[in-house]
Image 1 (cartoon, protein in one colour):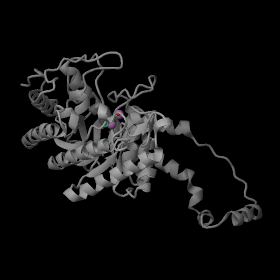
Image 2 (cartoon, rainbow, N blue to C red; image 1 turned 135 degrees about the horizontal axis):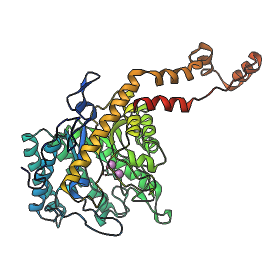
Image 3 (cartoon, rainbow, N blue to C red; image 1 turned 30 degrees about the horizontal axis):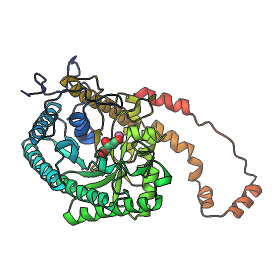
Length: 431
Ligand code: XLS
Ligand code: NI
Ligand code: NI
């Protein structure tokens, strides 16, 4: 029995349950020839579940956890409880930042030793259980040294600190067999141009990412390097605004075949996009990697990082992921936190269980929509005019020849319905 989760038993698939169970998520159910667990590849995010204390801009800690404290003893207890929850959920993956799992030391070397000791403990626990590492990452945003950025900091010493930290976190991710390494540039942006050298900052961020890719090859890390876009928050203008901006950035630095993108639902919404738009765009550019699954409150306009509970939204996201061929090294990371009034251990487990069920329902709906084929057929029909040899030849032509042909053939476009409501009605049959 767990010290923290007390009488909470390991969750099972039980559609009839009225307690803590998976009513829709069944890891072993075969879908399109693959187990549901292997399609969805769920992960717990250590920062929200075990490091976040329940604070908001107006108040501090609301959670009372026995592992809160800046000693190694606390860190070891935190690791124990985290792995207990992974077992209760029977979740296949987890993700972490260095700062989530170790106390900050008085020097870089002390922080490194603290971190390496916990990584060794993680390695032991992982070999005794079934939970693997989806991705590791470095926290280059919480400590005040990063207030003006990490790789984009005007102070070269902070660039150096960031490089050493990422090296350490990549080594740890490699050691634990992580499937990806993520970079989210929380502070890689700026508040005002009055104090910012935009060009230099962008160049430093690009050079930093090139060094990350070089280091991946140097140590033989076979996972995927992922960048996670976010348009604002914490800084006002972020260099990694959305998928389109990150793709342009990768192209600029020759990294578009080396680095892929980790797309977060809440960040997509903050950027003024839908989640499925970001996924479809990344897939079309060959840079789709993984997802951070959560949900923002649509009224508050900031990154509330709630657990997903909107099946139709989730279904449209998985529909695009399936069309892109599904995950390879990526997965569904719950970058989500319980609300600050959700004090009980049970709230933490129920949040993940509910989110996994929501994703399972959305995923199954997506599979059904794809197998049904009506949506794809109607989309293809909308563009069918382009399948003719004349239309294709126009793409090899030029403006003057096209203009001539328009008049000589008497071309006269006839508007046709986009049928949006009918398409939405079709989606509604499946969700
Ligand atoms: C914050 C980000 C962060 C990354 C990992 O908004 O989502 O949690 O996923 O650093
Ligand atoms: Ni986020
Ligand atoms: Ni995230």
